[in-house]
View 1 (cartoon, rainbow, N blue to C red):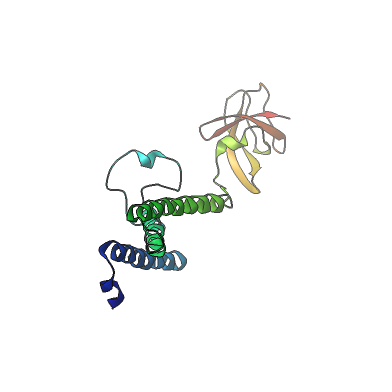
View 2 (cartoon, helix red, strand yellow):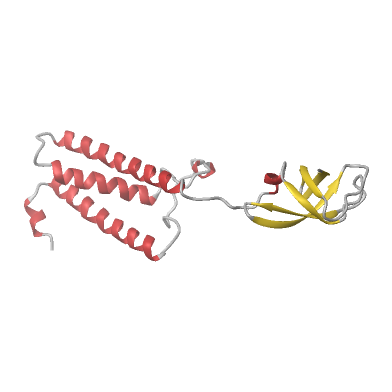
Length: 189
């Protein structure tokens, strides 16, 4: 199939095999990405370096990054093998280009993530917001009531108490001053 490779020396053949193999894997990964073949690389690092504690979608040691590196490395080696006189220089340049491919992928992911929006409901985000009493809130922590409050365009019915010595009647506007677990602490406005 690849008879033209037989006339090349060993290093040049290696660059071609790396370039063609990584291109095939890259095309398969790209195809799976677009048809929904999986949300992750499918392969994890074979060692525990504490890298999973990083709160980021980009992991330096991943199968996808290996493929990106080999793609840049292999095709750079193929392209510059005959132009440069030194085999060591070709390997160094190919390695640098492989690392640049990883950095380009990282920059691309970083830019794509800027387009995402986190609409996860976190009760702490309600501190300082105003709502309306839905069910009467008894005075000074003597019982719970309920309020209707909106966050990011979504209304929520949540349990609330007050530290005030006066009960807060239905349809009264309140401000959230603190959160205790899933319970809002409010005061009348």
